[in-house]
Amino acid sequence: MLNGQLRKVYMVYFFLDRLDKVSSFQYLKKKELISQISSHKLKKQFFLGTGSNSLDENIGLIRYGMEFKFDTFLIMPPAYYKNNTDEGIYNFYKNIIFKVPKVKIILYNFEKLSSFLFSPNFVKKLVNDFPKNIIGVKDSSYNLFEKLKIPNFLIFPGSEAKLVKGLKLGCAGCISAVTNVTHSMARKVFDNYANESSENLNKKLILVRETFNNYNLISALHSYMSIKNENYKNLLPPLVLLKDEEKRELLSNLEKLEFLPNKGLAA
Image (cartoon, one colour):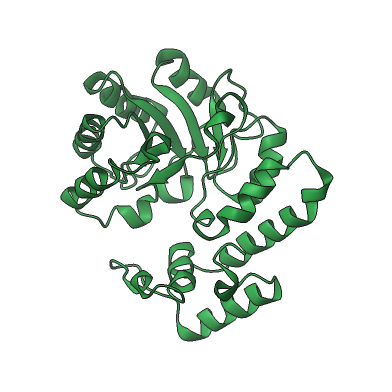
């Protein structure tokens, strides 16, 4: 979801953005998905994640996506190195931009997964050095969205629980895996965040997100969505569905919030 200068777009969709899930996909499978979505009627609203630790794979997927007119990519630093330095991560993005000069990059700030925390000053350096390429950040570590101020720079907190706070600070919206099921509710909150009438809906949105946060997020989402569509029972190892007891607990807690699949995935 976007605010400010890009609000006219209304909604953007991120594909392959969860590194913890998408890193299990084979390189060719990612390319296959990119080619499949390239003919979608909403294609112009799609941003792609690469979901890869490999510099070469990132470059290859970006080049392949650009063949289908995709130019904006969500990219996280490699997750398999510990104690990465600003210099090393700078070189990672510099190499991508050198190889694909027209790419637009949304940085992915998620220390828990990548073991690297973007600081406001480091983000500013990247934007200053590559102003046509580094256009935004997904902030799942939540150390940037309240502090970082860069003109015409898109900032997306990584949770709908931060959506309204972020919008009031000038953020562009949020990027969240849970909006796969809260999208309708999140959209209403986004459209009416300045209106007091949306306060109760926003409180419910936050409580739903916090309920999912009590479990492995991908496991909980697939367990929840599989109630209506059994295809969501298919997870690539090492990810698994919630245990039966956990699933019952999840659904019980969501029922208390009047958020259940039989009332629509985004009731």
